[in-house]
Amino acid sequence: MTSLGIWSLSVALVAPLATVAVAGSPAAADARRPAVVETRVIGHSVKGRDIVAWRLGEPSSTKKVLLLAAMHGDEKGSVQTLRNLRDGRAIKGADIWVVPVVNPDGYARNTRQNAHGVDLNRNFGAKWRKIGGATNSGRRAFSEPETRAVRDLADEIDPTYTVSYHQPLDGIDIRDTGNRRWAERLAARVRLPKRAFDCFSRCFGTYSMWFRAKHRSGAVITVELPRKPSRAYLREVAPRAILGSIGARR
Image (tube, rainbow, N blue to C red):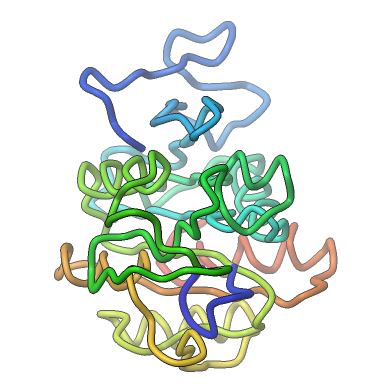
């Protein structure tokens, strides 16, 4: 996680990258999920669980978006936000990839860290530093299969916009996003205060830091959802907010 990190909410693409068709449809579309146009297993966790990415919207759009959740496995609200986005009506105006559970082992055990005890949001390759304790950064940058999976997907997509959803610090980190106007729009729509999270001192090896260093033409935001958001907020407000902020719609 980034910012005030310890609580923050914010694959290896193997060549050839596996694409999983949804049952009954060779195009990997799903009549039950009209927003979905493709489903991929983009990597596997330490324990071998699938890390799944869902492609929504219009693949031909030049507006590329990557949304990540549950980088910390105990931040459940972030997962529901992306699942609700995935499971709604068809989307127009953007090519959106969502990874609802970046850390499936931590999600299954309800732990912040992955099965190696690593905080995935300290394991990215920008200003990485060896850290122990609850924010254990791993043996080296990208030592974990989950962060390599995210790295490779982001490198493939090269998104215009990317959001790392976390919980429960209740705010949007507006520092060094790469697009301040977008950050302002998203903050207003998602009804969260604008903040500058600092991981309790300094941040090292976060997804946002790596993305800004590697993908300088793109913009990245860390969204910290409230501790106890309502079901209506996760089902309606948060999904609509990201779509509206990038000019997409259902």
